[in-house]
Length: 198
Image (tube, rainbow, N blue to C red):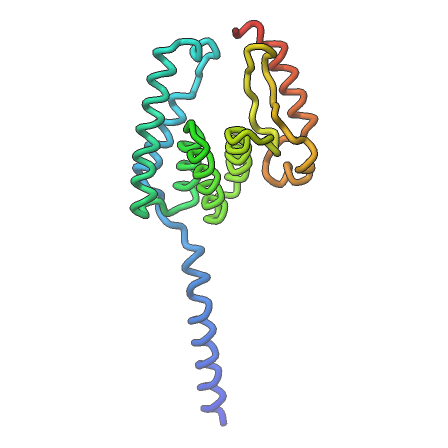
C-alpha cells in the first residue's frame, strides 16, 4: 500500500512538472539581440538634443531620414530572420519603426510594441499607444490617446485630429499616457514657446 502511494505521488509529481515546464520555460529571460540594441541606440542618439530649428535645415533632415530608412531595413531583416527575441528587442524595434514615414511603418511599430508588452516589457504600453495614434493620423483618422503633437504652419502646435472622448483617462493611465488635462497643459506651453522656435 505504501509503495502504491509513493508510486502514485511520484507519478503525479512527474505529471505536474511536465505540465508546468512550458510555463517555466516561457518565463526565462532571453538575451537581447546586440544588433537590435545598437540600432536602437543609434536611433535615439540622432534625436538626443535636437533643437527645433534643426528641422528647418534641409541637409540635416535629409540625412536623418536616410539614416532612419537604413535602420528600418536592418531591423526588418532581423525581424524576418527571427532574430528578435526579447521584450527589449521588440521595444527597440517599435521605436525604430515609429520613426518611419508610412502608415505601414507605424502599424508595424504598433505590432512590435504589443510584442514587447507580451514579452514582459511593461513600459512598452506608451509606445503601443503612440504608434497607434500615429498610424490613425497617417490614414486620415483621429488619434485616440493624445500622444501626437504636431506643428501646423498656419495655426502652430496642435493635437488635431484628436478624438478626446473614445479613451477615458483611466485607460490612458494604465497605458502610461498622460491624462487629457496634462496633455492640454503641455499643448498650451508649446503654443507659448512656438513663436520663438519658428
